[in-house]
Image 1 (cartoon, rainbow, N blue to C red):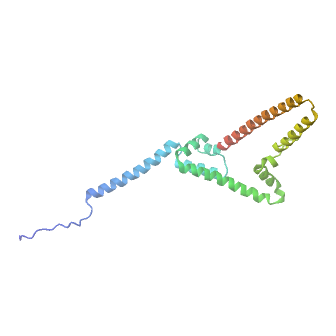
Image 2 (image 1 turned 180 degrees about the vertical axis):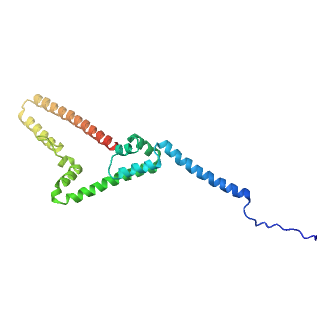
Image 3 (image 1 turned 135 degrees about the vertical axis):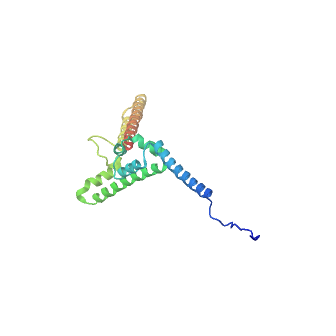
Length: 201
């Protein structure tokens, strides 16, 4: 043999070890993503499929209670899932808002037709309850009550001649109004809490 040396090209393809490392890294990334999704599911208590079902049910106007019942859970479970998953929380708000918007569009469309006047009345009651809400006979709104009290105070001031008596009567009237206002606020707060609870369900 001659003294010609054999040359080995440095441009060889990926070695077995490098390909193996690449597959290993890819597999690790896939497992990591899978474990991450599994972790979110475990922490929230709802699977991805269940979340999609909840959103679909809410989007047609059903309550969270109904949606939770469909997936075998409770409204609290949905709330827990939303707290653990920001994307799901946002999707919940969008689904519920979309259902409300769709309903309002339908009601507004119906209200344009005279035979569906009740739809227009419903909108007015919801938008401006103090002005348009149906009341029992003999009841007053806040503005009407203020007018009555103002005139009653003027009558007392004009007709009760003894200053001490007039002062005592007006003080009692003022105390009564404050107590009544406090009770109205409590009732208003109770109604607001009830509405929030119904919404959550």
